[in-house]
Image (cartoon, rainbow, N blue to C red; front, side, top):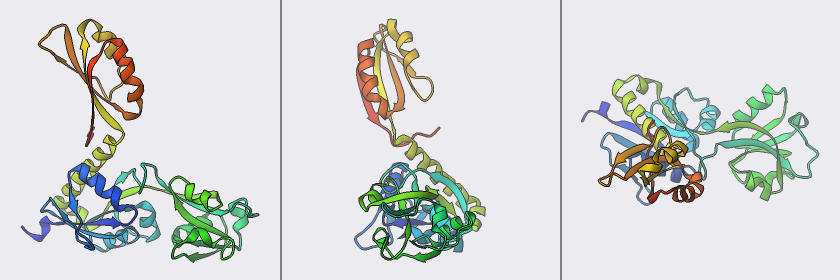
Length: 293
């Protein structure tokens, strides 16, 4: 195997790690991380992986250390990295929601809007993003880098913070209120520009992107199989939600047909009782690994 047939991928260590490995596994790429190792093995001889902080991945992809990587668009912008954004993947460390970088102040702070931050001190891990946002709003403030525990720095050390949140619950727990959102970020599959010009690497990267998108699409869906009385088939099938048309198969007993659909999981608890009332039986619900349109 030549070096050209190896794709070097940067995987995020830390908060995004568990979710990333979960979706890669559903996509068909199983990474095995040994204790204290930063070099996971994978069941694909054409891939080499390194675990590294999400904050650094975009820079290393830009430099060509990695051909491809998974990180948030926030870190691509924060590090000023010039990379190919191959795919937008809607997942975060705990949910399928995007991450928001927000300006927050103590609940009892007199600061009510971004205009009140003129001349104030702000702590954050995303200094460039914050300065760019303030500049776009015509605000001149002192933005300092925070090494962590940013929520506890107001009001004694700084006037406001910029912090990442998925639900806002951590900010509320620390008696902070949001006054503005500076960026909404999702995970991206990014590629080195030169690597993406290589036909083999580009195809490999696009295959990974397609399979990851399929894994994410399947996250909120399930499959349903059932048997329907033929005489009730048209009436029931017309009311069935599905991605396209239901799959209908003949059974040995000609009085019945088998029907299969893919639906949003959140509606199943209401759908199954209605199907049962309408005459469906032998209803089977099953999970999905990938949904490829």
